[in-house]
Length: 163
Image (cartoon, rainbow, N blue to C red; front, side):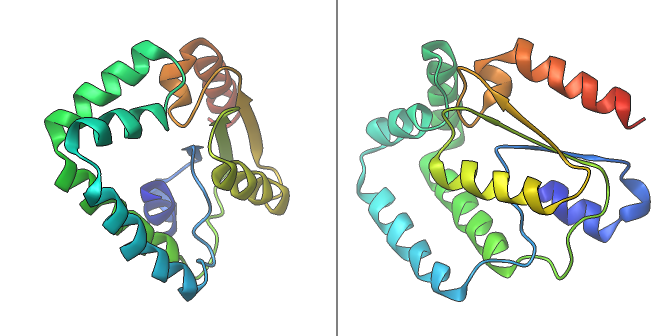
């Protein structure tokens, strides 16, 4: 989401963009989506910290080692900060951008990414001429950590073709 904001606001400073587990923020999502924010955050606050960290990690990574790493990392960051960032991310998704980014675009996600992200990212690719779509096997939301060899190979190929 941040990449799209930067590419839109500073197009002369961005050569290409890579979106790992990302979705488009142009034109934004329906305001009704806004109703989900309090529901998601409210339900998340009810989950005890220890279980929240485990749940969060298990829904973003496939590899047990990566899940453990993510669980430890967000525990250091703190549940309140994770929920705050989630809220801000959802607000950015809803507000969107007035125009899509125009730089070359690589969309990449793990084959075990959430259904919503897989569908939105695939649609984004279909609607963006010249974009590149890569699906990383044996990977979830953080495909670069679940399957770094495949991710890095796809990233290098994209960068080589756009520099």
